[in-house]
Length: 478
Image (cartoon, rainbow, N blue to C red; front, side, top):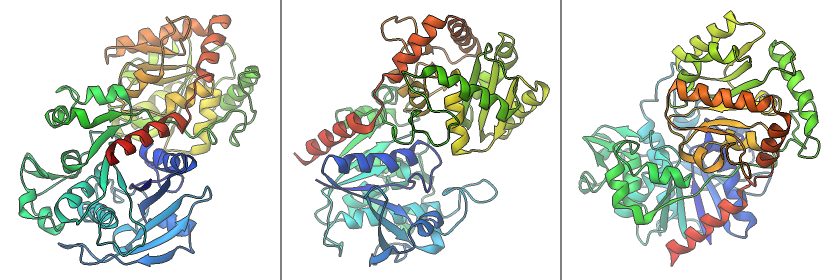
């Protein structure tokens, strides 16, 4: 099968979250099974710098509305995945985050920037394309490419099938009515059965309405988003399309995330050499200025600092947590109030809590390897990757029973399969109770080693997930 994977991020070059990781790993996994998968992604500065020899292969034109004529360049990643780089410097040659300006607000022309990405994806999936390669399926990802199925429905001749994967329903790509003309969409598209959503144009709703099929990144999240409580205003549409909706759990890149080979770690270890994990803990404590104490459990967070991630709940009980006793290390950025709150707490408790605002890939790896317990108290979590990294690194996670966290972490109460600690209500009290259980288990060496080995034995590779996507592609074509 020929698949165009359309995305606004691709690790390791451009990444703000899980979408970047998926885009960097899933196409390669699909190609390893034998399918022809090519990735369409904007030619951000990092990608142009990484692939200076990318050659122009097309100039899509007459795209409609105010959409410009871009250049389409071709490159090949080190693992052999073909890239189609959408090059239009006025839209994509911008520093930093792909969605936000220097002041932290959305770029005012995001509807055009990602409308162009969606439109070119649809152009490639129709007879209008001038390439000698046409995909059978366009695999779209999140709102940034959600308009592609709508373009296929309204503007394409003999369109390819389309699949929209929802990585996070909370981000919907909402713009005003004037965007309809600017994006070159017909007036007929402005309806509740089209792209209109409560007076706005919604990229995500357009994809949910018009894609041949919909997937999301865990089975539990697929069920949750069909409820009014967690459907972000789109539950009715998702229930209407329930027969076309599938939950497929993400995998992780087991080459980059392997404690036996991880280039970021001071000491490699694995299921048969798990005692060497203690060396990573001591080095991490030294690196961040914590007391070097093997007897104190080290709790870790690597996350966006937002209420979605439940980091306000953790902050509310941080004092009670270090009084268990325990240590805390936090890496992340996000809401100013949470950045300030965590930084202030660490300042008041030197040696017991360390906080680094920002992101550092190598440091994230050292945290996963050096921590004893990983904390993910998310109010909602479509899939989550850090809990899978933690399981692979022998760092039992504490998670809320939601989305992909519920699909991957089994509570320690299950003696045969338990690999972490799960709590239900999104409250500080429920989180604290789970942390108390985790700390108590840490003090039982036999139980703790069993939890670690159960987690490290879990297969989190992309192989199974890629197989599910292949089955879904075949269903669409049938």
